[in-house]
Length: 403
Image 1 (cartoon, rainbow, N blue to C red):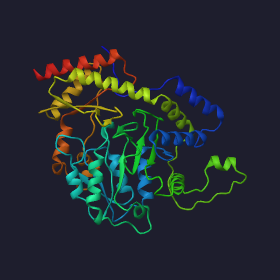
Image 2: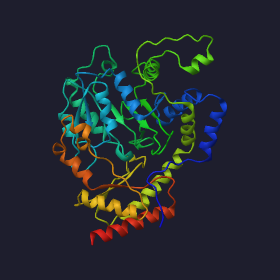
Image 3: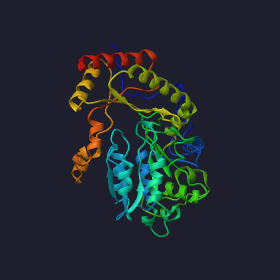
Image 4: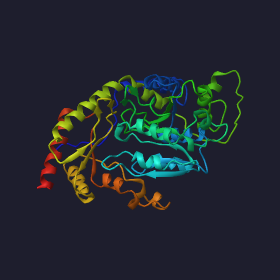
Protein backbone atom coordinates (compact mmCIF):
# COMPACT_ATOMS: atom_id res chain seq x y z
CA UNK A 1 0.00 0.00 0.00
CA UNK A 2 1.27 3.47 -0.88
CA UNK A 3 0.92 6.43 1.47
CA UNK A 4 -0.13 9.55 -0.45
CA UNK A 5 -0.14 12.80 1.58
CA UNK A 6 -2.66 15.43 0.58
CA UNK A 7 -0.49 18.42 -0.24
CA UNK A 8 3.24 18.33 0.56
CA UNK A 9 5.29 21.37 -0.51
CA UNK A 10 7.34 21.03 -3.70
CA UNK A 11 10.76 22.00 -2.34
CA UNK A 12 14.25 20.99 -3.40
CA UNK A 13 17.90 21.97 -3.48
CA UNK A 14 17.14 25.22 -5.30
CA UNK A 15 15.02 26.45 -2.38
CA UNK A 16 17.48 25.09 0.22
CA UNK A 17 20.40 26.87 -1.44
CA UNK A 18 18.43 30.12 -1.66
CA UNK A 19 17.59 30.04 2.06
CA UNK A 20 21.15 29.07 2.97
CA UNK A 21 22.50 32.12 1.16
CA UNK A 22 20.12 34.41 3.03
CA UNK A 23 21.05 32.85 6.37
CA UNK A 24 24.73 33.26 5.56
CA UNK A 25 24.19 36.89 4.50
CA UNK A 26 23.37 37.94 8.05
CA UNK A 27 20.15 39.67 6.92
CA UNK A 28 17.07 37.48 7.39
CA UNK A 29 14.16 39.88 7.98
CA UNK A 30 12.53 42.15 5.37
CA UNK A 31 15.20 43.39 3.00
CA UNK A 32 16.56 42.94 -0.54
CA UNK A 33 15.08 39.49 -1.20
CA UNK A 34 11.58 40.60 -0.25
CA UNK A 35 11.89 43.65 -2.51
CA UNK A 36 13.15 41.43 -5.35
CA UNK A 37 10.22 39.04 -4.89
CA UNK A 38 7.77 41.97 -5.00
CA UNK A 39 9.29 43.15 -8.27
CA UNK A 40 9.24 39.72 -9.87
CA UNK A 41 5.66 38.96 -8.83
CA UNK A 42 4.56 42.27 -10.35
CA UNK A 43 6.35 41.37 -13.59
CA UNK A 44 4.85 37.86 -13.61
CA UNK A 45 1.32 39.18 -13.07
CA UNK A 46 1.75 42.09 -15.55
CA UNK A 47 0.97 44.60 -12.81
CA UNK A 48 2.92 47.24 -10.98
CA UNK A 49 5.12 46.30 -8.06
CA UNK A 50 3.57 43.75 -5.73
CA UNK A 51 3.46 44.02 -1.95
CA UNK A 52 4.63 40.91 -0.04
CA UNK A 53 3.25 40.42 3.46
CA UNK A 54 2.78 37.61 5.97
CA UNK A 55 -0.34 36.06 4.39
CA UNK A 56 -3.13 36.51 1.88
CA UNK A 57 -5.31 37.49 4.82
CA UNK A 58 -3.02 40.34 5.85
CA UNK A 59 -2.78 41.52 2.23
CA UNK A 60 -6.56 41.55 1.89
CA UNK A 61 -7.13 43.31 5.21
CA UNK A 62 -4.49 45.95 4.47
CA UNK A 63 -6.16 46.52 1.08
CA UNK A 64 -9.54 47.09 2.73
CA UNK A 65 -7.95 49.54 5.16
CA UNK A 66 -6.17 51.43 2.39
CA UNK A 67 -9.56 51.63 0.62
CA UNK A 68 -10.92 53.11 3.89
CA UNK A 69 -13.63 50.48 4.21
CA UNK A 70 -15.08 50.53 7.71
CA UNK A 71 -18.18 50.92 9.89
CA UNK A 72 -21.35 51.57 7.91
CA UNK A 73 -19.92 49.91 4.78
CA UNK A 74 -20.89 46.59 3.25
CA UNK A 75 -18.66 44.05 1.51
CA UNK A 76 -20.14 41.27 -0.62
CA UNK A 77 -18.59 37.82 -0.13
CA UNK A 78 -19.53 34.28 -1.15
CA UNK A 79 -20.93 31.88 1.43
CA UNK A 80 -18.81 29.10 -0.10
CA UNK A 81 -15.29 30.02 0.91
CA UNK A 82 -12.75 29.85 3.73
CA UNK A 83 -13.18 32.15 6.72
CA UNK A 84 -10.26 34.43 5.68
CA UNK A 85 -12.42 35.89 2.89
CA UNK A 86 -14.97 37.16 5.38
CA UNK A 87 -13.19 37.61 8.71
CA UNK A 88 -11.26 40.60 7.34
CA UNK A 89 -14.54 42.42 6.78
CA UNK A 90 -15.28 42.18 10.50
CA UNK A 91 -11.70 43.21 11.28
CA UNK A 92 -12.23 46.59 9.59
CA UNK A 93 -15.66 47.08 11.15
CA UNK A 94 -17.72 46.63 7.99
CA UNK A 95 -20.66 44.31 7.38
CA UNK A 96 -20.26 41.19 5.22
CA UNK A 97 -23.13 40.38 2.88
CA UNK A 98 -23.03 36.67 2.01
CA UNK A 99 -24.23 35.35 -1.33
CA UNK A 100 -25.31 31.78 -2.02
CA UNK A 101 -23.82 29.72 -4.86
CA UNK A 102 -25.26 29.65 -8.31
CA UNK A 103 -26.91 26.20 -8.56
CA UNK A 104 -24.43 23.53 -9.58
CA UNK A 105 -21.32 25.74 -9.22
CA UNK A 106 -18.94 26.87 -6.50
CA UNK A 107 -19.17 30.53 -7.57
CA UNK A 108 -21.52 33.17 -6.24
CA UNK A 109 -24.92 33.54 -7.84
CA UNK A 110 -24.08 36.73 -9.71
CA UNK A 111 -27.73 37.76 -10.10
CA UNK A 112 -28.15 37.63 -6.31
CA UNK A 113 -24.82 39.44 -5.94
CA UNK A 114 -26.05 42.27 -8.16
CA UNK A 115 -29.37 42.45 -6.31
CA UNK A 116 -27.48 42.84 -3.01
CA UNK A 117 -25.67 45.99 -4.14
CA UNK A 118 -26.83 49.18 -2.41
CA UNK A 119 -25.47 52.57 -1.39
CA UNK A 120 -23.44 50.95 1.43
CA UNK A 121 -21.63 48.47 -0.85
CA UNK A 122 -17.96 49.36 -1.22
CA UNK A 123 -16.22 46.12 -2.22
CA UNK A 124 -17.02 42.74 -3.78
CA UNK A 125 -14.68 39.84 -2.95
CA UNK A 126 -14.96 37.02 -5.51
CA UNK A 127 -13.04 33.81 -4.71
CA UNK A 128 -11.11 31.91 -7.38
CA UNK A 129 -11.79 28.53 -5.80
CA UNK A 130 -9.29 25.76 -6.61
CA UNK A 131 -7.46 28.22 -8.87
CA UNK A 132 -10.35 28.55 -11.36
CA UNK A 133 -10.86 32.24 -12.17
CA UNK A 134 -14.37 33.59 -11.56
CA UNK A 135 -16.66 35.14 -14.18
CA UNK A 136 -15.28 38.67 -13.88
CA UNK A 137 -17.15 39.80 -17.00
CA UNK A 138 -20.40 39.25 -15.13
CA UNK A 139 -19.04 40.80 -11.93
CA UNK A 140 -17.93 43.97 -13.71
CA UNK A 141 -21.25 44.09 -15.55
CA UNK A 142 -23.11 44.02 -12.22
CA UNK A 143 -20.93 46.85 -10.88
CA UNK A 144 -21.60 48.94 -14.00
CA UNK A 145 -25.33 48.24 -13.82
CA UNK A 146 -25.48 49.49 -10.22
CA UNK A 147 -22.97 52.32 -10.52
CA UNK A 148 -25.47 55.04 -9.62
CA UNK A 149 -25.82 53.47 -6.14
CA UNK A 150 -22.13 53.85 -5.34
CA UNK A 151 -21.42 56.35 -2.55
CA UNK A 152 -17.65 56.63 -2.01
CA UNK A 153 -16.04 58.17 1.03
CA UNK A 154 -15.02 61.69 0.08
CA UNK A 155 -11.32 62.09 -0.69
CA UNK A 156 -10.67 58.35 -0.53
CA UNK A 157 -9.21 55.86 -3.01
CA UNK A 158 -12.80 54.68 -3.46
CA UNK A 159 -13.65 58.07 -4.94
CA UNK A 160 -10.69 57.95 -7.35
CA UNK A 161 -11.74 54.51 -8.60
CA UNK A 162 -15.31 55.77 -8.91
CA UNK A 163 -17.22 52.52 -8.47
CA UNK A 164 -17.47 49.43 -6.27
CA UNK A 165 -14.01 47.88 -5.97
CA UNK A 166 -13.51 44.27 -7.04
CA UNK A 167 -10.93 42.66 -4.77
CA UNK A 168 -10.17 39.05 -5.67
CA UNK A 169 -9.45 36.44 -3.06
CA UNK A 170 -6.84 34.83 -5.30
CA UNK A 171 -5.36 32.64 -2.57
CA UNK A 172 -5.62 29.64 -4.93
CA UNK A 173 -5.05 31.23 -8.31
CA UNK A 174 -1.51 32.58 -8.64
CA UNK A 175 -0.52 31.85 -12.24
CA UNK A 176 -4.06 31.35 -13.57
CA UNK A 177 -4.93 32.89 -16.93
CA UNK A 178 -8.27 34.27 -18.14
CA UNK A 179 -9.12 35.89 -21.49
CA UNK A 180 -5.46 36.50 -22.23
CA UNK A 181 -4.79 38.12 -18.85
CA UNK A 182 -2.86 36.89 -15.84
CA UNK A 183 -4.62 36.57 -12.53
CA UNK A 184 -3.65 39.83 -10.86
CA UNK A 185 -4.53 42.05 -13.80
CA UNK A 186 -8.23 41.08 -13.87
CA UNK A 187 -9.72 42.31 -10.59
CA UNK A 188 -8.90 45.80 -9.29
CA UNK A 189 -6.92 44.25 -6.45
CA UNK A 190 -5.85 40.61 -6.10
CA UNK A 191 -4.43 38.97 -3.00
CA UNK A 192 -2.39 35.76 -3.29
CA UNK A 193 -1.44 33.14 -0.71
CA UNK A 194 1.97 31.47 -0.51
CA UNK A 195 1.05 29.25 2.44
CA UNK A 196 2.79 25.86 2.72
CA UNK A 197 0.02 23.99 0.85
CA UNK A 198 -0.20 26.42 -2.07
CA UNK A 199 1.25 25.84 -5.57
CA UNK A 200 4.00 28.37 -4.88
CA UNK A 201 5.06 28.71 -1.28
CA UNK A 202 7.14 30.92 0.96
CA UNK A 203 6.16 28.66 3.92
CA UNK A 204 3.87 31.47 5.09
CA UNK A 205 3.17 34.62 3.14
CA UNK A 206 1.13 36.42 0.54
CA UNK A 207 1.17 39.20 -2.02
CA UNK A 208 -1.14 42.02 -3.08
CA UNK A 209 -1.24 43.45 -6.61
CA UNK A 210 -3.53 45.86 -8.43
CA UNK A 211 -4.36 46.70 -12.04
CA UNK A 212 -4.89 50.44 -11.54
CA UNK A 213 -1.64 51.68 -13.08
CA UNK A 214 -1.97 55.28 -14.19
CA UNK A 215 -5.18 55.79 -12.22
CA UNK A 216 -3.72 55.97 -8.73
CA UNK A 217 -0.49 57.14 -7.12
CA UNK A 218 1.29 53.79 -7.06
CA UNK A 219 4.22 54.93 -4.93
CA UNK A 220 1.86 56.41 -2.35
CA UNK A 221 -0.20 53.19 -2.21
CA UNK A 222 2.94 51.07 -1.83
CA UNK A 223 4.15 53.27 1.03
CA UNK A 224 0.73 52.92 2.68
CA UNK A 225 1.02 49.12 2.59
CA UNK A 226 4.50 49.39 4.10
CA UNK A 227 3.27 51.69 6.89
CA UNK A 228 0.20 49.58 7.67
CA UNK A 229 2.25 46.37 7.78
CA UNK A 230 5.08 47.68 10.02
CA UNK A 231 3.50 49.49 12.97
CA UNK A 232 3.06 52.74 11.00
CA UNK A 233 6.83 53.22 11.14
CA UNK A 234 8.35 55.42 8.43
CA UNK A 235 11.60 53.50 8.07
CA UNK A 236 12.11 49.73 8.28
CA UNK A 237 15.17 48.02 9.77
CA UNK A 238 16.85 47.53 6.38
CA UNK A 239 16.45 51.19 5.48
CA UNK A 240 17.81 52.25 8.89
CA UNK A 241 20.77 49.90 8.47
CA UNK A 242 21.67 51.42 5.10
CA UNK A 243 21.01 55.06 5.89
CA UNK A 244 23.14 57.72 7.51
CA UNK A 245 20.55 58.28 10.21
CA UNK A 246 18.67 56.01 12.58
CA UNK A 247 15.83 58.53 12.84
CA UNK A 248 12.29 57.33 12.15
CA UNK A 249 8.76 58.23 13.10
CA UNK A 250 5.59 56.24 13.82
CA UNK A 251 2.81 58.15 12.09
CA UNK A 252 -0.09 55.90 13.10
CA UNK A 253 -0.72 52.87 15.33
CA UNK A 254 -0.83 50.01 12.85
CA UNK A 255 0.00 46.34 12.36
CA UNK A 256 2.95 43.93 12.02
CA UNK A 257 2.67 41.58 9.06
CA UNK A 258 5.79 42.02 6.92
CA UNK A 259 7.49 39.19 4.99
CA UNK A 260 11.11 38.38 5.96
CA UNK A 261 13.88 37.72 3.44
CA UNK A 262 14.37 34.14 4.57
CA UNK A 263 10.83 33.38 3.34
CA UNK A 264 11.09 35.58 0.25
CA UNK A 265 14.13 33.53 -0.78
CA UNK A 266 11.95 30.41 -0.93
CA UNK A 267 9.45 32.31 -3.08
CA UNK A 268 12.12 33.49 -5.50
CA UNK A 269 13.39 29.93 -5.94
CA UNK A 270 9.83 28.69 -6.45
CA UNK A 271 9.11 31.41 -8.98
CA UNK A 272 12.16 30.35 -11.01
CA UNK A 273 10.45 27.04 -11.79
CA UNK A 274 6.81 27.96 -11.33
CA UNK A 275 5.75 27.37 -14.92
CA UNK A 276 7.09 23.81 -14.67
CA UNK A 277 5.07 23.35 -11.48
CA UNK A 278 1.91 24.52 -13.28
CA UNK A 279 2.62 22.25 -16.24
CA UNK A 280 2.94 19.23 -13.95
CA UNK A 281 -0.30 20.06 -12.17
CA UNK A 282 -2.18 20.25 -15.45
CA UNK A 283 -0.70 16.93 -16.60
CA UNK A 284 -2.13 15.36 -13.46
CA UNK A 285 -5.52 17.06 -13.91
CA UNK A 286 -5.74 15.72 -17.45
CA UNK A 287 -4.87 12.26 -16.19
CA UNK A 288 -7.54 12.39 -13.48
CA UNK A 289 -10.16 13.80 -15.85
CA UNK A 290 -9.60 11.00 -18.35
CA UNK A 291 -9.72 8.31 -15.66
CA UNK A 292 -12.96 9.56 -14.08
CA UNK A 293 -14.88 10.62 -17.19
CA UNK A 294 -17.32 7.67 -17.09
CA UNK A 295 -18.15 7.94 -13.39
CA UNK A 296 -21.24 9.68 -12.03
CA UNK A 297 -19.27 12.53 -10.50
CA UNK A 298 -18.82 16.23 -11.23
CA UNK A 299 -15.28 17.57 -11.58
CA UNK A 300 -14.13 21.18 -11.90
CA UNK A 301 -13.16 22.35 -15.38
CA UNK A 302 -9.62 23.67 -15.06
CA UNK A 303 -9.12 24.58 -18.71
CA UNK A 304 -11.23 26.04 -21.50
CA UNK A 305 -11.04 28.12 -24.64
CA UNK A 306 -10.38 31.34 -22.70
CA UNK A 307 -9.00 30.18 -19.38
CA UNK A 308 -6.46 27.99 -17.63
CA UNK A 309 -6.56 27.61 -13.88
CA UNK A 310 -3.57 27.41 -11.56
CA UNK A 311 -4.50 23.76 -11.03
CA UNK A 312 -4.48 24.20 -7.29
CA UNK A 313 -7.11 21.69 -6.15
CA UNK A 314 -8.92 18.75 -7.76
CA UNK A 315 -12.58 18.74 -6.70
CA UNK A 316 -15.03 15.89 -7.21
CA UNK A 317 -18.72 15.78 -6.30
CA UNK A 318 -20.66 12.56 -5.85
CA UNK A 319 -23.86 13.43 -7.67
CA UNK A 320 -27.00 12.50 -5.80
CA UNK A 321 -25.07 11.58 -2.65
CA UNK A 322 -24.96 13.17 0.78
CA UNK A 323 -22.36 14.05 3.39
CA UNK A 324 -22.57 10.61 4.98
CA UNK A 325 -21.54 9.02 1.68
CA UNK A 326 -18.75 11.55 1.19
CA UNK A 327 -17.40 11.07 4.70
CA UNK A 328 -17.36 7.31 4.35
CA UNK A 329 -15.59 7.66 1.00
CA UNK A 330 -12.99 9.91 2.67
CA UNK A 331 -12.40 7.34 5.41
CA UNK A 332 -11.99 4.46 2.97
CA UNK A 333 -9.49 6.43 0.89
CA UNK A 334 -7.53 7.13 4.08
CA UNK A 335 -7.67 3.44 5.01
CA UNK A 336 -5.95 2.76 1.69
CA UNK A 337 -3.24 5.35 2.30
CA UNK A 338 -4.71 8.22 0.25
CA UNK A 339 -5.28 11.42 2.21
CA UNK A 340 -8.05 13.61 0.78
CA UNK A 341 -9.67 16.81 2.04
CA UNK A 342 -12.93 18.77 1.83
CA UNK A 343 -13.13 22.37 0.51
CA UNK A 344 -14.94 24.09 2.15
CA UNK A 345 -17.51 24.14 4.86
CA UNK A 346 -19.72 27.07 3.81
CA UNK A 347 -19.30 29.93 6.27
CA UNK A 348 -22.84 29.70 7.75
CA UNK A 349 -21.99 26.16 8.95
CA UNK A 350 -19.16 27.46 11.15
CA UNK A 351 -19.77 28.47 14.77
CA UNK A 352 -18.22 31.93 14.35
CA UNK A 353 -20.79 32.81 11.68
CA UNK A 354 -23.71 30.98 13.27
CA UNK A 355 -23.07 33.15 16.30
CA UNK A 356 -23.40 36.23 14.08
CA UNK A 357 -26.82 35.13 12.86
CA UNK A 358 -26.03 33.30 9.64
CA UNK A 359 -27.96 30.08 8.95
CA UNK A 360 -27.02 27.49 6.35
CA UNK A 361 -30.73 27.03 5.58
CA UNK A 362 -30.53 30.41 3.83
CA UNK A 363 -27.75 29.10 1.56
CA UNK A 364 -29.12 25.82 0.18
CA UNK A 365 -27.02 25.77 -2.99
CA UNK A 366 -23.77 26.30 -1.09
CA UNK A 367 -24.73 23.43 1.21
CA UNK A 368 -25.62 21.28 -1.78
CA UNK A 369 -22.15 21.82 -3.27
CA UNK A 370 -20.46 21.07 0.04
CA UNK A 371 -22.34 17.97 1.20
CA UNK A 372 -20.87 15.63 -1.43
CA UNK A 373 -17.58 17.37 -2.29
CA UNK A 374 -14.16 15.71 -1.92
CA UNK A 375 -10.71 17.02 -2.83
CA UNK A 376 -8.16 14.50 -4.09
CA UNK A 377 -4.39 14.79 -3.62
CA UNK A 378 -3.04 16.59 -6.67
CA UNK A 379 0.29 18.37 -6.47
CA UNK A 380 3.52 18.71 -8.40
CA UNK A 381 5.40 16.25 -6.17
CA UNK A 382 3.05 13.42 -7.17
CA UNK A 383 4.73 10.83 -9.39
CA UNK A 384 2.93 9.04 -12.22
CA UNK A 385 2.85 5.84 -10.16
CA UNK A 386 1.41 7.69 -7.18
CA UNK A 387 -1.21 9.40 -9.34
CA UNK A 388 -2.21 6.03 -10.76
CA UNK A 389 -2.51 4.66 -7.22
CA UNK A 390 -4.88 7.52 -6.34
CA UNK A 391 -6.95 6.76 -9.45
CA UNK A 392 -7.05 3.01 -8.81
CA UNK A 393 -7.93 3.50 -5.15
CA UNK A 394 -10.66 6.01 -6.00
CA UNK A 395 -12.23 3.63 -8.52
CA UNK A 396 -11.99 0.68 -6.12
CA UNK A 397 -13.69 2.62 -3.33
CA UNK A 398 -16.25 4.08 -5.76
CA UNK A 399 -17.19 0.64 -7.12
CA UNK A 400 -17.47 -0.86 -3.63
CA UNK A 401 -19.75 1.94 -2.40
CA UNK A 402 -21.91 2.33 -5.48
CA UNK A 403 -22.57 -1.39 -5.80
